[in-house]
Length: 172
Image (cartoon, rainbow, N blue to C red; front, side, top):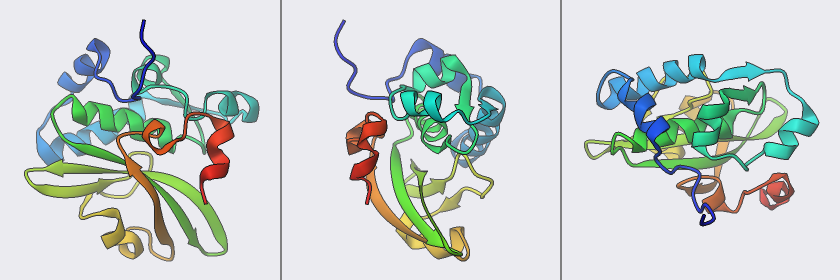
């Protein structure tokens, strides 16, 4: 068996889940975001277990395992969102951002999806609405009081060089 090179390969499981989500375009994005809140159980954060799987699972594995860690779930939920969009032929980008504001600093994932020639931003793991634009164009309005800086954009975290917890140091 060849080594996997992408976290967002479309499998039979992914196609089945995607086909079961109603709607097209923006309606599909909103339905997918809602469905992922049901499909992926948020379990209590376990520092050792989370570190052992950070940036290692494929979207198929995430959807098959059916869990993410509370407070450390943005990459996994974003990958699941992306692959479900790809299964519907909707081009999608994984966007790793560094956010700062209100005395805090952190990293997060957002997703950009193309629909009928327009780009939309989704935070599949957050409560914000899906809005039209690119991450740079809505950073202050999407997260009031915070600034966002795009650290990387690609098809998945592996494309950005994030393949395990040891890669965290490359984010700056």
